Image 1 (cartoon, rainbow, N blue to C red):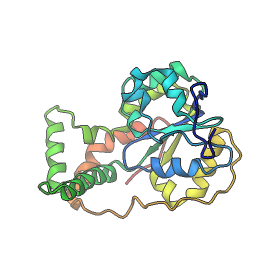
Image 2 (tube, rainbow, N blue to C red; image 1 turned 90 degrees about the vertical axis):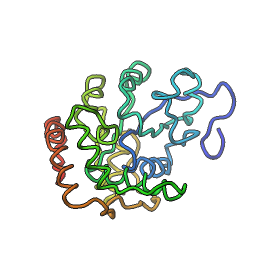
Image 3 (tube, helix red, strand yellow; image 1 turned 30 degrees about the vertical axis):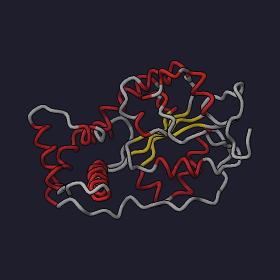
Length: 244
């Protein structure tokens, strides 16, 4: 093992103690970078291995070469919506500890569209009106189409797959807003879930997810109405966060 906790050699294989997933821009990077500062936890080769979603054909041996020696894991947000991912993880690592990060769905859509807007700016592409784009996406759902941006924040729909594969006690649900407001407290909860001493660490500065205000109030209200039934069914699973 190197000083950074990476693998060396063909024979050094590890198994994940934890897997972090969630929607994009919800804090998985901040969580992972703080988790691996714990003295008992080692870093994987890369944060997002994406094995169970897009690299599965590489095989189990390849995956275990990416995982750090000892207590280690990975953080791949895209696992959350992958229809085959829960079953694949369950079959290979039935006792793994899962950590899922979620944020207010309306804020999530806002952030996703803002990131697209910034991407267009950086690459000199036409700018978008994110409120207009959000309304177009809502219109498509009203005629029976599924929009990938809106769909990823329909938490109840996706969590049903995970709860069919795993006992709920194996899954730690973290609210992104709370993670960024109470990082040390949330890290202690995560460490206990993983099974290590909940020590206080010198944290990486967290980037706030709550300083965006780019969707019009009307569009935010419409998105809130769209997500309300999904949120209610999600709360009925025992995760009663009550996003406004």
